[in-house]
Length: 165
Image (tube, rainbow, N blue to C red; front, side):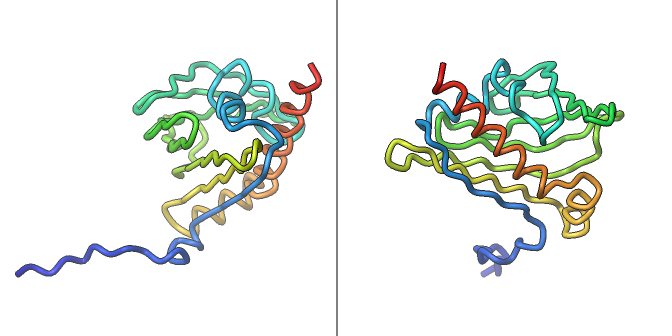
């Protein structure tokens, strides 16, 4: 009988390779999912404070490509290519940064979970990097942890603005 090296990884095994954020939004899950997947909405809030975003293409389906450019307040453009791996509306998105030549060399797989919570949405974003060193590089070079917090705060503000309209 062959021995298998497959196992269930404990929750802490990849902690040194992850960036995780959780927020609760005062909006229905379907709306929060739409804000994350509809290019006309994504371009309004995506990125840290001071950034604007241009969506070049966004095909939200497994294997679909999402190309975007984040325009920094310093005038620098950050071109990104993302490939959707899993789309379960309105529950989950899984995608990977898959850099092309000339795009930001960030490699990670992101899982976004949209959970219903009494008419509100609990959103969990988990970015998993190939190594702790790559996670640390992205956190230091790009300010990924603070940027993710600002990014989600901008989503919250966009949802509040939509509720007023």
